[in-house]
Image (cartoon, rainbow, N blue to C red; front, side, top):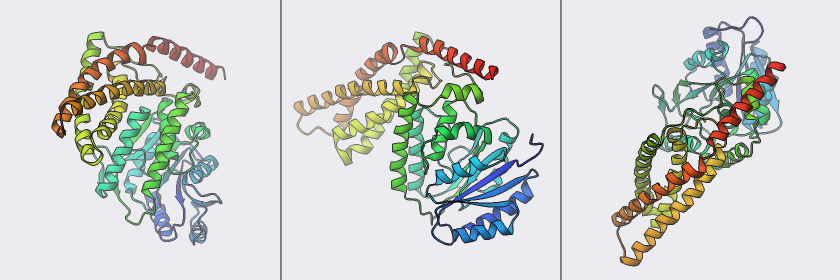
Length: 414
């Protein structure tokens, strides 16, 4: 299971803020489980970020009671601050964290940690959204979680299934390479870490988990969702501007080339684009019918087209044009939104024509008109994607090869 020959193997961090009711039970349960399940050196770190209740006193008592428990306190509030501080100070080979409410069954810890100790993977995450996971939570949280992760896939081109599950582990050398580039220090912290890791070519291992929602959670869902949206936009901007040195991180730690796969033939591109278009049109229709009764025809058309445009660009980039690396992803999504604007103008004009020709047309007539306009917009979209958005792929491949080769050469010279 492990390649550890000495020293601390695993450091499991429990970030806490005002958790006087949960902390002792969590640490007692965790220490008992680790003592039975792991046969390599481990410890538990309580990372307190500015608690104002009895959490510090309880944490100090637990650290005095157990040799394998340490307590760190920050005066600054923020889960990201707590994790960053504890991980950077840890001498362990693998650093991890889990939520104090123990929503995730601890039986998932060994398969979470093992791929990192063996050197197979760089980051390991628990997921509630893959087959094999068993999740107990309300429909509201389920919808929010799935919508958020779908947005990440479309906007940032990532493949990991669950960004928000509080059950993650990372090799310490990988953490040291990524943490200087992670700007968020709150709830978006680990999502940003995962995005940078995947876009740098690191290997992320996923473990389906048994997870039970904590009904007493004090997390402000609305505020967290708004913060996450801002985080997604900031990270997308950073990647677009090349602010994060992905090639250098890849050269040091990456597992696979940051190169696109072979380009499908023109006929293959047409077939694949058509398949993506069919699914996009169906998705547009479903979204429109859901939104139209609440927001009206124009707003429903805009919202449905915007959502499907982001997902459509991501799908065509990978499936139709065979581009899988991170190079120019943000720019191409931006160009895709310009194409979306043209498509929206076309479909909106069709609605204006319909309403000018017919008094109070029904939702069915509006939908038929919009779907016909979308067919024309689809032809325009393919032409623009091929001739403009993804036209520089050959240059990207050569540049990608040169950057990777340069990075590897620098690493070898060092």
